[in-house]
Each structure stands twice: as C-alpha cells, then as structure tokens.
Amino acid sequence: MSSIPPRYSRITGTGSFLPPDRLSNEALAARLARDGIETSDQWIVERTGIRARHFAAADVTSSDLALPAARHALEAAGRSAAEVDLIIVATSTPDMVFPSTACLLQRKLGVAGCAAFDVQAVCSGFVYALTVADAMIRTGAATCALVVGTEVFSRILDFKDRTTCVLFGDGAGAVVLEASDQPGLLASELHADGRHVEILCTPGTVSGGQVLGDPLLKMDGQAVFKLAVGVLESAARAVLAKAGRSEADIDWLIPHQANIRIMQGTAKKLKLPMDKLVVTVDEHGNTSAASIPLALDVAVRSGRIRRGDTVMLEGVGGGFTWGAVLLDY
Ligand code: UT7
Image 1 (tube, protein in one colour):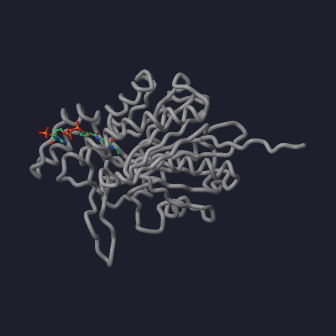
Image 2: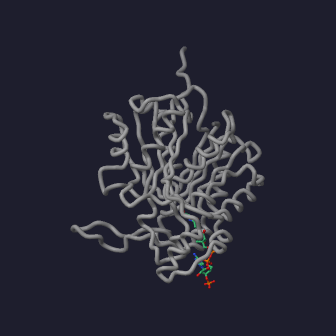
Image 3: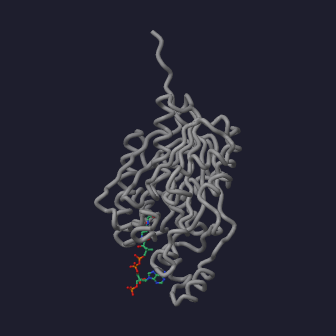
C-alpha cells in the first residue's frame, strides 16, 4: 500500500524594507512641541524601549513598502515572482478600500494569475497570514507563497495624542513559504476576542463619499498591555504543547514589537534569557503587521537566526487578536 508523503511548509527566504526617513525620539518630540504637545526621549525609552521609528513619505503606500520587502525575500529564496502561486498581505493600512493591497503588490511585481488577498488582524496579521499560507500549502492549494506584513501607520496616527503617536512606525517585512517534505512550520495558535474592539481601533469608515467617524487610531494602552501579557504567555504554551516541544527548545522568540516591557515580561514567564529575544522595537517602533517579519529578517540577515533554529513568532493587537507560530527555520 503506498502512503502519501507528508507535506509541510518552510520559510525559504526573508526580506524587509524601511522607508528612509528615520525620526529619533528627540526629533519627534521637537515636532510635537511645535503643536504644544509635550513628550521626551526619556519617557518614550523608559515606557516602551522605542528610540526611533521610520515614517513613509506622504505619497508612499503600503504596497510601495511591500514591493522591495517582497523582492528581497524572493531573492533570498532564489525564486522569481512568476513562481509564486499565492500572495497574502497582512495590513491594517491598505492602499485603498479595495482592491486588496495583495493585488496591488502582485501588479507591482509584474505577475498575474496567482491567488492574492489581504488578511486584517492588525498587529497579529502576520501570524494569521502565515498560518493561512501554511494551511493552503499543506492541503495542496498552494506551493510557493509570498507572505507580507506592511504598514503605513503614520497615516492613521493622531499627532495631537501623545499617548499613541510616539509608539508606531512604518515598514514592511516578507517571507517566501514553500512546500517541503521537512517541517518547517510546526504548529500555530490563532485567537480573537471581539468583546475588546474598543481598546484598540481606528473606528472611521468611508461612507457616502465621506469619512464617517474618527479615522485616527485610538488605544487604551493599559488595557492592551494587561491583555497582551496574559495572552502572549498562554499562546506560547499552547503552541509548544501542540508541537510537542518545550520552552527549552526555543532558540529565538520574536514577539510583536510593541513595547520592550511586554516582551521582557513574556520572556521571563517562559524562562527565556533576554539574549534569545529578537528586539527591533528600539529602531522600528511598533509597525503592526510588519513588526514580526521585519524583526525576523533583521535576525536572519545579521546571522543570529540560522537554518535549523527553532523560532517562536507571537502577535497581539487590535480585535482583540493574538496568536503564535512555532517553526524550525
Ligand atoms: O500594537 C498593539 C499592541 N499595543 C501595545 O502593546 C501597547 C500596550 N501599552 C503600552 O505599551 C503602554 O500602556 C503605553 C506605552 C501605551 C503607556 O505606558 P504606561 O506605562 O501604561 O503609561 P500610562 O498610560 O500609565 O501613562 C503614564 C503617564 C500619564 O501621566 P499621568 O496621568 O501619570 O500624569 C500619561 O499622561 O505618562 C503620560 N504620558 C506621556 N508623557 C510623556 C503618556 N504618553 C506620554 C508621552 N510623553 N508620549
């Protein structure tokens, strides 16, 4: 009796892109001071670990940032865009109401025909998108997927609200995920709790040719903080149990890059030393769906994450959404 060989998915290349305009805390504080908003480098560093963020120019969109990130990932994987049969883009700052940013990226890559769609799970978007791509590869619906997280969060920031505008930045990260007879993605956990919509949202919408409601980001930082610490621990433990692994097996933890204190708290609960944590929040700020693939690419290109390492990715954010992916790189 012949058996069907197992089919897994594996990351074969990573890429990222940051818009060139880097704004230090001091430069942002000086800009906000012109409008009478007080903040300081000291407050931002102490409360968040953020030292700088990148902002895209006014005419640069999420698909513009996604394109170089996708090209870098394809190059690293040794694939051409024509070989991709699935494009998933995670973003909460799409170029348009429709079509999807994935379709716009597909056109910019100069290819046509493959499936392309967006995933909207805010800061958990990349973990969601990777899980969907993995499932499609395992079932044979796709063979070579481009999975991208890209954001221009600067577009939805209220620069009169110092409690949020100092936290976020723009950028994009991408991976190529391919079918493999070796695992790859070991397990994933996705969750949402819509009862907490209001603690992190951008409630405005387009209606009748006008923006209806507030189109700028609102966050109850303390409520998000408390929820995030709890769910990042539970998702990590659940995904390890699913994969039959333990905390000791984790070589690298890449949590969503929102606040160094949340990341340190998660590492402590999992009894992971801080040098197993990939940290880019200091230089990128919170780039929402882009934060995890950006951090992954930085760690891969700097030689820290190597083939065979066990990596945990963890997302958490608006929705409320959260999730974890465990993988052998
Ligand atoms: O991406 C999705 C996930 N998002 C997150 O994970 C964000 C989670 N939340 C957080 O990271 C933190 O709650 C914040 C960084 C947003 C805030 O830190 P906090 O330690 O919770 O500060 P707080 O909100 O308790 O504010 C403390 C003080 C307040 O002043 P009073 O009321 O104590 O006088 C704020 O008005 O800090 C003040 N404050 C600021 N001061 C200077 C708030 N923002 C600023 C600012 N500069 N930018």
